Amino acid sequence: MPVIDGMFREESDGSGRLLGGRCPTCGAVFFPKQWSFCANPRCDGSTLDDVELSTRGTLWSFTDNRYAPPPPYPARDPFVPYGVAAVELAEEQMVVLGQLASGTDIAGLAVGAEMELVVEPLYDDGESVRTVWKWKPA
Picture 1 (tube, rainbow, N blue to C red):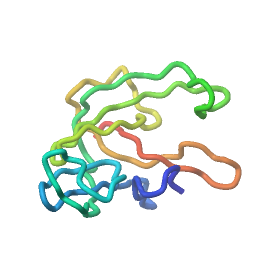
Picture 2 (picture 1 turned 180 degrees about the vertical axis):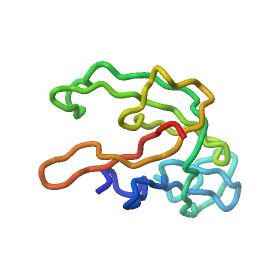
Picture 3 (picture 1 turned 90 degrees about the vertical axis):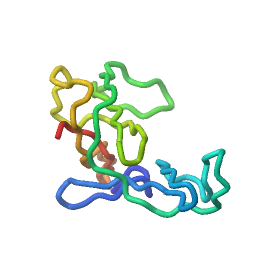
Picture 4 (picture 1 turned 60 degrees about the vertical axis):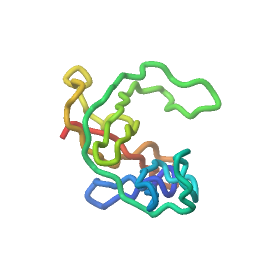
């Protein structure tokens, strides 16, 4: 079950699609789709169409998170470091942040590498497994 409804769709094979919005007036794409109007200041579009975003992109930047976030933000106990990737989606002309997929060797990454979207568990609350999109080398 997605940790946040409406931001992505997951498939049983572990793949997924980010869900955004596209303005039919100017063509601007937004993620997440949180408005019912175009947020482009040069456009007066009053609606956004639902759109699935690209599943592959180029690694724009990355880092590893070695410190647990402070309360009230959730963190595993014990905290497990994880990588974060900023991936540029060329068709949508945007950069989307996400964690790096489990098992990704951050030392082997390089800016410009092709990345692929996957869906993995974020945590198990005892009643259900909550999932999130992540990036892995393609």
